[in-house]
Image (cartoon, rainbow, N blue to C red; front, top):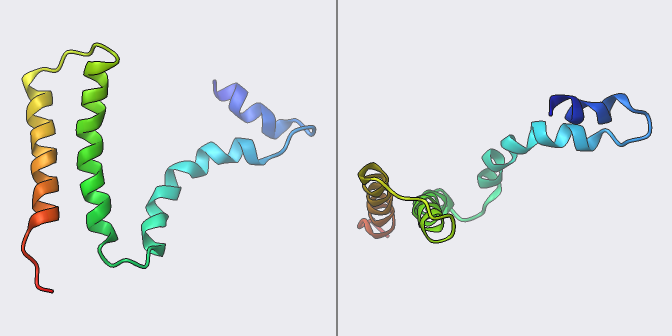
Length: 93
């Protein structure tokens, strides 16, 4: 796999950006929140993460036939409890 990824860089007939895109893609989500005008965006992103974890587990059960154990269920419950704290905690206006 590594050979296929870096072979585009060695060839003069292909563009350089496809081989550099996988290296830079993990960094993109870390910079996107810094450009958001909403001051609550960090909370929104954290809450989305909790829902995302629970949703992926549900997808695994419904679509892939994955069997959850008690630790999966506890972890998903903790994520959703965290979402509830983030979204519904009383804050000064």
